[in-house]
Length: 313
Image 1 (spheres, rainbow, N blue to C red):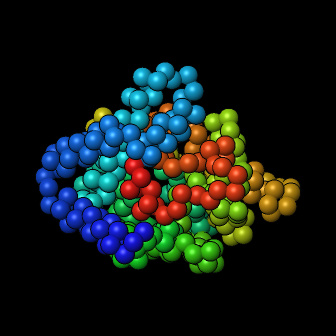
Image 2 (cartoon, helix red, strand yellow):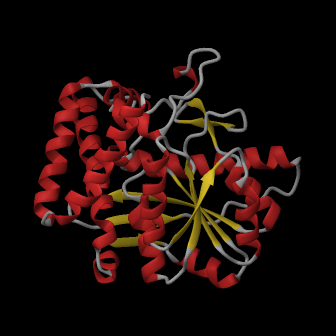
Image 3 (tube, one colour):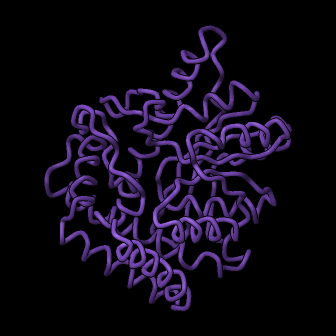
């Protein structure tokens, strides 16, 4: 990106946080749907990849059904952004009233155990709102990791945004965050990680909707090293303004095998939980990037920063 492009990207996100926050909620919802429909009609790279991904999730879907799902998916994606731009101004009551979680006892029991808890989530619905619910309703701060975005000013905006919701935010920089996460867990803390895509060399291959993909090794390795509970979580929207979710039972650490073998088994279990939630609510899976290994040309690297991927939508 050019320096001018960097400044434009940062300015657009800044406008979103400053401007959308001031809109009445119905107006923000209409704006989100309008932008989503416009992006969907343009059929840019991100929309086309979303449809290709959804074709794996719903393999018997007709072209018309896939088009319906991708349009609903873009509306869900823009709902995430409209909510996120407005979330720092929401009251605690609004946050609590906007989330309903099934089997929350898996999380609350884990927090009470002082073993440390790792929540692993896919890119479903609004994970930031779910995080705000944890810090407000459960009064439990947590630590998370974010990709270093370009420009640096945009990364700083995302860090400040998530810190305003009660999160401790660590930059993802070559695994340097792992030690800090391990210390937080050994102290009985909570760690939340978005964990459905990792195309780096350290990613673990899993079976996912009948094909091979890579997902991060971090959640499983942290659980092994610290004794923390590893809990998959899935989220979805319904017809109301409420975000819903489910906390799955803890993924067990296998009794036998090397650390790598155990991590592979555990990561597959996480992938299976993600697949369960995504299959039930495919329109809320915001995966506009390549995920399956068969979509990657030999030796080709991931698409790049999240900011680039947003522009490619």
